[in-house]
Length: 489
Image (cartoon, rainbow, N blue to C red; front, side, top):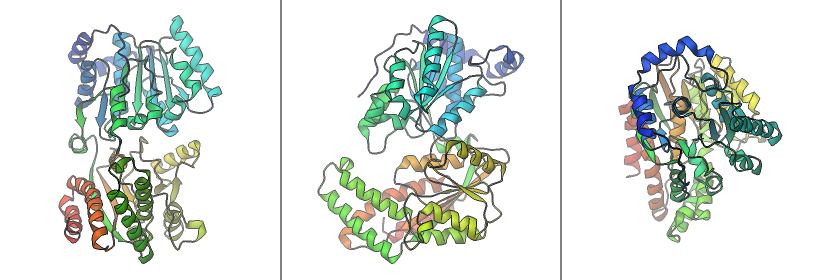
């Protein structure tokens, strides 16, 4: 376990908790309104309209009780970023916090954090492009902090920049009173990232709806060993909906069958997975099994019949707006070369065949173009976005009204992140709608079938979990139970 050394900051945590608990949030909102402009740019300050929810305040108090360490495990969309920035402001006011370092897995999350930071009167350095664009600025501001010429420093970077020597060389100069925030922190549990986390920074906060790393217990231990254990309250999807932090939703599973050739390939892969499982005691770390599972996942994700299911669904929904289409990165059989990728085929069906106003939103889309597309979607100029993975984590587009999931992995992180993305509240948004395409496995021989049933049981569990909280729970669960009975699960 990669634990950081204890940093002695001489903080009176008991007094900090007492002060925070005694202060009336409503009075502070009124008080803040009178002197907001008196604060120079770059100094942490709460927005005049901010009123933290009770679970956010409880999380801050419990982080104090844990002496400046901890992981916030909150449902996607429940306000982890706001909680972290409110905590930053409190630390500045009470202990003279000097720096905030935020680490994000993706560049688009850096720009999103920047927008939120500006609401808190912060002026962040964005460190994710060439080192020449930010290193001198960071060096100068660190010097100004140590010389007393500057009161506060905010820097937002990416995981990839964190591990580079240019950034690593600067970490030793960060002041003692620095708060490090790991956003979507489960990414930081890998050995390469975990070893790069600064040990000289003692105030640590991790944010993730899913801090437990998928099939990686050592990575989870490394993450929690550095940032600190999960602190209460854990804010589940059910609680988030109940407290109106997320909106209610309707859930419609759509069952899709494989083509004959896809079913044959599926059976071969499943048989090979079964053989590998029988011959491996440590299958979670077995690269052969991982590769086979990924290959089969791509086959399921890009099943050709999903395109016809999409066509039938959207023919009756051409007037809907703010719709998100999640695609896989696989290729589809019997499609022309121009539309072989699922994202290309889906865009063709929606945009060319049906006249639905859509654009793609992928990792290949330049960052500036992504921001323009996001705005067009929010304003209603585009009816839909066709995305691959890069909308899974962190991106805040609360205007999404409905989503169609054509492909998803077996990783529960992805499923949890996606549903939270869809349920974010927005003015006039009372309910979201989710269509979830589920591939029906083909009939297999007896030996292969036993392997398949175990894998399918795990897949069905999360579908049932999501169906349980839907407004149409009885209808959705009824459809899923038919699979349960058919496959004798």
